Length: 211
Image (cartoon, rainbow, N blue to C red):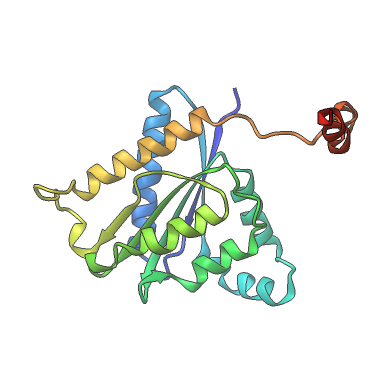
């Protein structure tokens, strides 16, 4: 059995980066859950920081450089994607959005995607629901129900009486992504032109309805 492919897209700008740290935690949780299901997985991390120049050039020329083209192909061919961005001005970063603008807008259709974000305070957490989720819904991706936001104060805390801690949210989201990856049907192949001959033209169907 071929291993599943998991691509982690991190838009963190600094090193070390809390965005990359959250991305790694989510990947580990997904790997563990896939291992519980006895599924092998190959993980590829795409650091958008390293591709910033190539992304800008591709936006104005329409031609991605080799490194960017390889990253785009990895995301396109993956069985599941983890997409993590820092929140700037109440939304995803420009670098994060530009990467997904470079990808063909049908490439993520039906693909399981886990969305996550980091920010300075919990006040920006709704950006997941008003910015990231609509973006991937537009791309017709299968967005995991649990989105994970990590503010600075979330690291190392266990949550409160109303909310789970960050660690619990990471485990739940990774489990949901793994479940969708395991249940995902194989990608549809090209349409067999011979089968189209069996389709009755719409005009004939209408004519058959007339008295």
